[in-house]
Length: 359
Image 1 (cartoon, rainbow, N blue to C red):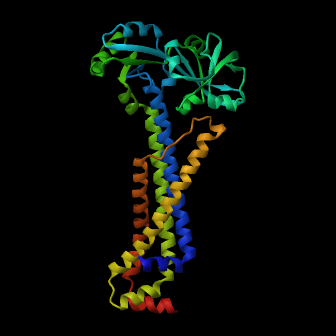
Image 2 (cartoon, rainbow, N blue to C red; image 1 turned 180 degrees about the vertical axis):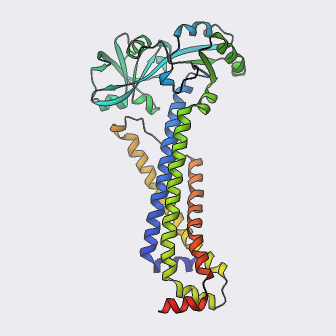
């Protein structure tokens, strides 16, 4: 360990370059994974608030495109085991000067899900603003949606970024704005063991309805799959760029230290010792880069969380699982990136190394 630290101090410039390259790559993986996971987590939390079963229009690609007749909520409510049915309209619209804002049309029973900071819950022609969008719009008294002006009845606070940066309104008003009856039903059950039977009953009401448990819906939701796939692809690119950077820099390090490795070989040290030494040096850099990237990523995520321009829609959290995953990725990146130059150095003829190193 001491020998490895001395070698790193001796080659400070190249050590710094490897450290910076690894830190940037690891931070990129942290941020991409945390933000994509945060988006999925926020939307999932919003759906799970009042729903054990989610009912949508069959075959739709996104809940924003779903349109189901809210009259179906009455027969669903009468089914044995159903505790509550909430109809929601999910939409998005510009609210000057913001280019896009999430809009949620809800029935009166769901208002309890929004914790009031000031004012009251909206009546007809009124809206409730999340605290983030209220700050962004400088506490407006009215807003315009789809060329119609709505009075702001109050402000609410939510831990879910999508809601805290959105607009809540009555289901009827939202139906007029987005020209639909309801996007989804959130069905709350008194007994979760009856969920499979209830799903069959709901699906049997109409061929246009599709019911799933909340967990099943989240697992199969296409948008979540797209987000996760995109995150994995970009993360893999950051991983590969990190490996290429390490290979490039370690190749230069090996070239500069050929004489040192030649002497080690001539003294009878095996190729494995040289490889192990180089791997240990890079592993030290990787651990330091991981710690710095973790700290930087936490700082960036905190800035994003409180940035008004993102309206709370972009959020992320570095969980224990993500921390472990990125730690393993960091170690693998360091070892894989160093292995090829190390093997190359360990296999060159010792006399050739000494001669070239002293030339």
